[in-house]
Length: 213
Image (cartoon, rainbow, N blue to C red; front, top):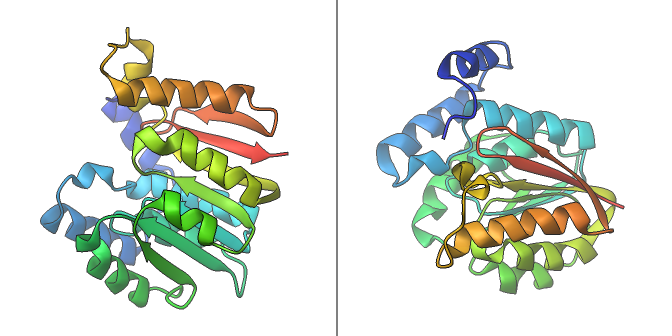
Protein backbone atom coordinates (compact mmCIF):
# COMPACT_ATOMS: atom_id res chain seq x y z
CA UNK A 1 0.00 0.00 0.00
CA UNK A 2 1.24 3.52 -0.83
CA UNK A 3 0.53 5.87 2.07
CA UNK A 4 1.76 8.83 0.03
CA UNK A 5 1.70 9.33 -3.74
CA UNK A 6 4.46 7.79 -5.87
CA UNK A 7 5.45 11.31 -6.93
CA UNK A 8 5.90 12.41 -3.34
CA UNK A 9 7.75 9.18 -2.51
CA UNK A 10 10.13 9.92 -5.38
CA UNK A 11 10.68 13.49 -4.10
CA UNK A 12 11.47 12.13 -0.63
CA UNK A 13 13.95 9.66 -2.14
CA UNK A 14 15.65 12.29 -4.29
CA UNK A 15 16.19 14.51 -1.25
CA UNK A 16 17.55 11.80 1.04
CA UNK A 17 21.02 10.28 1.21
CA UNK A 18 22.09 8.21 -1.78
CA UNK A 19 22.03 4.43 -1.57
CA UNK A 20 25.60 3.11 -1.05
CA UNK A 21 26.94 1.13 -4.02
CA UNK A 22 27.27 -2.14 -2.09
CA UNK A 23 23.66 -1.94 -0.95
CA UNK A 24 22.52 -1.10 -4.48
CA UNK A 25 24.24 -4.30 -5.64
CA UNK A 26 22.53 -6.30 -2.89
CA UNK A 27 19.21 -4.69 -3.81
CA UNK A 28 19.60 -5.77 -7.43
CA UNK A 29 20.71 -9.31 -6.60
CA UNK A 30 17.84 -9.77 -4.17
CA UNK A 31 15.32 -8.75 -6.83
CA UNK A 32 16.96 -11.01 -9.40
CA UNK A 33 17.43 -14.17 -7.33
CA UNK A 34 15.31 -14.20 -4.16
CA UNK A 35 11.61 -14.75 -3.62
CA UNK A 36 9.51 -11.90 -2.20
CA UNK A 37 12.04 -9.07 -2.76
CA UNK A 38 9.43 -6.67 -1.33
CA UNK A 39 10.70 -7.83 2.08
CA UNK A 40 13.94 -5.90 1.45
CA UNK A 41 14.16 -2.67 3.42
CA UNK A 42 15.27 -0.74 0.35
CA UNK A 43 16.91 2.61 -0.26
CA UNK A 44 14.78 5.04 1.77
CA UNK A 45 14.01 2.84 4.75
CA UNK A 46 17.62 1.69 4.74
CA UNK A 47 18.84 5.27 5.03
CA UNK A 48 16.38 5.82 7.90
CA UNK A 49 17.82 2.79 9.71
CA UNK A 50 21.35 4.01 9.05
CA UNK A 51 20.73 7.50 10.40
CA UNK A 52 18.90 6.22 13.49
CA UNK A 53 21.76 3.82 14.21
CA UNK A 54 24.32 6.61 13.81
CA UNK A 55 22.33 8.82 16.20
CA UNK A 56 22.09 6.04 18.80
CA UNK A 57 25.75 4.96 18.29
CA UNK A 58 25.09 1.44 19.63
CA UNK A 59 27.70 -0.88 21.08
CA UNK A 60 25.50 -3.94 20.54
CA UNK A 61 22.71 -4.40 17.97
CA UNK A 62 20.22 -7.25 17.63
CA UNK A 63 18.28 -7.85 14.43
CA UNK A 64 15.40 -10.33 14.26
CA UNK A 65 14.83 -11.18 10.62
CA UNK A 66 17.90 -10.89 8.39
CA UNK A 67 16.40 -11.69 4.98
CA UNK A 68 19.29 -10.96 2.55
CA UNK A 69 21.13 -8.66 4.96
CA UNK A 70 20.27 -5.23 3.55
CA UNK A 71 18.91 -3.81 6.81
CA UNK A 72 21.75 -5.51 8.69
CA UNK A 73 24.34 -3.51 6.79
CA UNK A 74 22.35 -0.29 7.22
CA UNK A 75 22.18 -0.78 10.99
CA UNK A 76 25.88 -1.70 11.16
CA UNK A 77 26.81 1.74 9.81
CA UNK A 78 26.18 3.21 13.27
CA UNK A 79 28.12 0.65 15.32
CA UNK A 80 30.75 1.93 17.71
CA UNK A 81 34.28 0.69 17.16
CA UNK A 82 34.45 -2.84 18.54
CA UNK A 83 30.67 -3.11 18.54
CA UNK A 84 28.69 -6.19 17.55
CA UNK A 85 25.59 -7.00 15.54
CA UNK A 86 23.76 -10.30 16.06
CA UNK A 87 21.25 -11.09 13.32
CA UNK A 88 18.78 -13.99 13.40
CA UNK A 89 16.94 -15.67 10.55
CA UNK A 90 15.26 -19.02 10.10
CA UNK A 91 15.83 -19.34 6.33
CA UNK A 92 18.91 -21.46 5.65
CA UNK A 93 18.81 -20.69 1.92
CA UNK A 94 19.69 -17.03 2.50
CA UNK A 95 22.86 -17.54 4.55
CA UNK A 96 25.24 -17.45 1.58
CA UNK A 97 23.96 -14.20 0.08
CA UNK A 98 23.98 -12.61 3.54
CA UNK A 99 27.58 -13.64 4.18
CA UNK A 100 28.70 -12.60 0.70
CA UNK A 101 27.65 -9.00 1.29
CA UNK A 102 28.68 -8.92 4.94
CA UNK A 103 32.19 -9.96 3.88
CA UNK A 104 32.28 -7.25 1.21
CA UNK A 105 31.41 -4.61 3.82
CA UNK A 106 33.63 -2.98 6.49
CA UNK A 107 31.58 -4.79 9.19
CA UNK A 108 32.35 -8.42 8.32
CA UNK A 109 34.01 -9.24 11.66
CA UNK A 110 31.34 -7.44 13.68
CA UNK A 111 28.30 -9.28 12.29
CA UNK A 112 27.31 -12.69 13.67
CA UNK A 113 24.67 -14.73 11.84
CA UNK A 114 22.33 -17.00 13.80
CA UNK A 115 20.23 -19.62 12.04
CA UNK A 116 17.11 -20.82 13.80
CA UNK A 117 14.18 -19.69 15.91
CA UNK A 118 14.67 -16.28 17.50
CA UNK A 119 12.53 -17.44 20.43
CA UNK A 120 15.26 -19.97 21.23
CA UNK A 121 18.27 -17.86 20.27
CA UNK A 122 17.51 -14.56 22.03
CA UNK A 123 17.74 -16.01 25.58
CA UNK A 124 21.16 -17.46 24.72
CA UNK A 125 22.69 -14.09 23.83
CA UNK A 126 24.75 -12.93 26.78
CA UNK A 127 24.84 -9.18 26.22
CA UNK A 128 22.80 -6.01 26.66
CA UNK A 129 21.59 -4.27 23.52
CA UNK A 130 21.39 -0.60 22.61
CA UNK A 131 19.42 -1.10 19.40
CA UNK A 132 17.06 -3.86 18.24
CA UNK A 133 15.29 -4.18 14.89
CA UNK A 134 12.29 -6.53 14.71
CA UNK A 135 11.36 -7.52 11.16
CA UNK A 136 10.44 -11.20 11.27
CA UNK A 137 7.30 -13.37 11.59
CA UNK A 138 4.48 -11.16 12.80
CA UNK A 139 2.75 -13.72 15.09
CA UNK A 140 5.79 -13.59 17.41
CA UNK A 141 6.19 -9.82 17.66
CA UNK A 142 4.79 -9.66 21.20
CA UNK A 143 6.90 -12.65 22.22
CA UNK A 144 10.04 -11.05 20.81
CA UNK A 145 9.30 -7.82 22.64
CA UNK A 146 8.94 -9.59 25.98
CA UNK A 147 12.24 -11.43 25.45
CA UNK A 148 14.07 -8.31 24.33
CA UNK A 149 13.11 -5.70 26.94
CA UNK A 150 15.06 -7.35 29.80
CA UNK A 151 18.11 -7.46 27.51
CA UNK A 152 18.04 -3.74 26.67
CA UNK A 153 20.26 -1.07 28.15
CA UNK A 154 18.31 1.90 29.60
CA UNK A 155 17.73 4.37 26.79
CA UNK A 156 18.06 1.61 24.20
CA UNK A 157 15.80 1.67 21.16
CA UNK A 158 13.58 -1.05 19.68
CA UNK A 159 12.55 -0.57 16.05
CA UNK A 160 9.59 -2.63 14.81
CA UNK A 161 8.80 -2.91 11.10
CA UNK A 162 5.50 -3.45 9.21
CA UNK A 163 3.33 -2.13 12.04
CA UNK A 164 0.80 -0.57 9.63
CA UNK A 165 0.48 -3.91 7.83
CA UNK A 166 -0.52 -2.42 4.46
CA UNK A 167 -3.25 -0.41 6.18
CA UNK A 168 -5.09 -3.50 7.39
CA UNK A 169 -4.93 -2.22 10.98
CA UNK A 170 -7.57 0.37 10.00
CA UNK A 171 -9.97 -2.11 8.47
CA UNK A 172 -12.48 -4.36 10.15
CA UNK A 173 -10.34 -7.33 11.15
CA UNK A 174 -11.60 -10.78 10.33
CA UNK A 175 -11.44 -13.30 13.16
CA UNK A 176 -9.17 -15.59 11.15
CA UNK A 177 -6.71 -12.82 10.18
CA UNK A 178 -4.25 -13.67 12.94
CA UNK A 179 -1.35 -11.56 11.64
CA UNK A 180 -3.41 -8.35 11.57
CA UNK A 181 -4.88 -9.07 15.00
CA UNK A 182 -1.41 -9.60 16.45
CA UNK A 183 0.06 -6.49 14.79
CA UNK A 184 -2.82 -4.41 16.17
CA UNK A 185 -2.33 -5.93 19.63
CA UNK A 186 1.41 -5.31 19.37
CA UNK A 187 0.88 -1.64 18.55
CA UNK A 188 -1.40 -1.33 21.59
CA UNK A 189 1.22 -3.06 23.73
CA UNK A 190 3.91 -0.58 22.67
CA UNK A 191 1.58 2.37 23.30
CA UNK A 192 0.60 1.22 26.80
CA UNK A 193 3.66 -0.58 28.17
CA UNK A 194 5.22 1.61 30.90
CA UNK A 195 8.70 0.24 30.14
CA UNK A 196 8.91 2.09 26.82
CA UNK A 197 7.93 5.33 25.15
CA UNK A 198 6.89 4.87 21.53
CA UNK A 199 6.25 6.86 18.38
CA UNK A 200 4.86 5.21 15.22
CA UNK A 201 6.35 6.59 12.02
CA UNK A 202 4.40 6.21 8.73
CA UNK A 203 7.56 5.20 6.87
CA UNK A 204 6.96 2.60 4.16
CA UNK A 205 4.79 -0.03 5.95
CA UNK A 206 5.18 1.65 9.34
CA UNK A 207 8.05 1.61 11.83
CA UNK A 208 7.70 2.12 15.58
CA UNK A 209 10.55 3.65 17.54
CA UNK A 210 10.35 2.53 21.18
CA UNK A 211 12.79 3.90 23.72
CA UNK A 212 13.36 1.74 26.79
CA UNK A 213 13.01 3.68 30.03
